[in-house]
Length: 414
Image 1 (cartoon, rainbow, N blue to C red):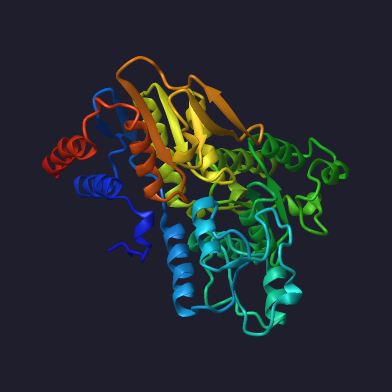
Image 2 (spheres, one colour):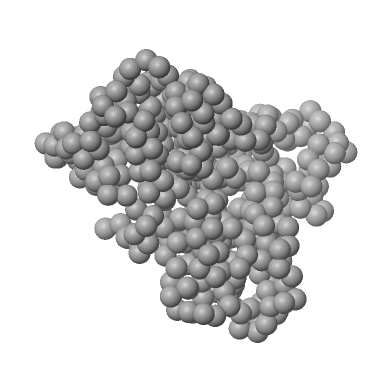
């Protein structure tokens, strides 16, 4: 039986919880990726089969709020944002937790101010070996409330295993994302490491493997994305691919196939296992589920898409990326960004700027809205987005009334 976590009630939604429970009861093996449709008459929402808090996020939230309960009125620190959601992080700040660093690594509170016994909560992305050692030397407690995602730790363990067998670790990730910084740090303890951002960079790495690029160009091609002493001539002869768990799983798989084929071309199919490690078991199931559900949601069609999540959330940005290919898409952090049917504030992640778009909501009725959220987004925000849009339509069917036929349909399906 799947573990359940103690998540504060204010992060939950009676509407979304009812939808998710009905889908789970009707499809316990998660084979049905069709969206959940809530029809309110003039507007209807198509919700992804999977969205919102994943296992790792719920685990982190449970640990952080337990730390607050167990240390009332005492100094508590988070190394950096626990997860990439501004609503969750702000609530933790308001309850007294202080943040030592920003998500980009900027020091907000000097480590010198820590005293022996101070509790430092490690975020879900994990922390670098260097930072953990520094904090431990200062006497800080970094183990009691470590919220590192178990699937991130799985990547670290697999990297160590194949690193000890003399494989180089190729990380598919964003070099300065907190998780990739941590994975890079842990992996280099046992192996040479290089980070590739996307399929394009993986193709360049394949050129080095095949000898089609000179090793002397490696440092300039991958600046600050390889471990000290990296020697492409020798270190690219045996590799294994792991990823930042929030990247597009399909792209990680494409990169893996590309580099695997390069090894076959260089060393022959019969010698593949000597040069390429199988790391397929390191992909995060939750990231994969959310991405597959979003693809099915997009395929089902809609007039527009609203994706809810933190603007610095990598996994959310990839859902936006998928939706933008097919329809007008708005990346919002919460219901406050939906000012009116005439104005919406949303994030352009490609340009890294917040934009204001006017006349964004279609005049035609009914309007169909694709709605999903990143893995660090509380269900309560999805609930509030739905209610915000419904408030613009006085003729809309009451929320509970629209929910009844949906629940009846899925109880029958069970």
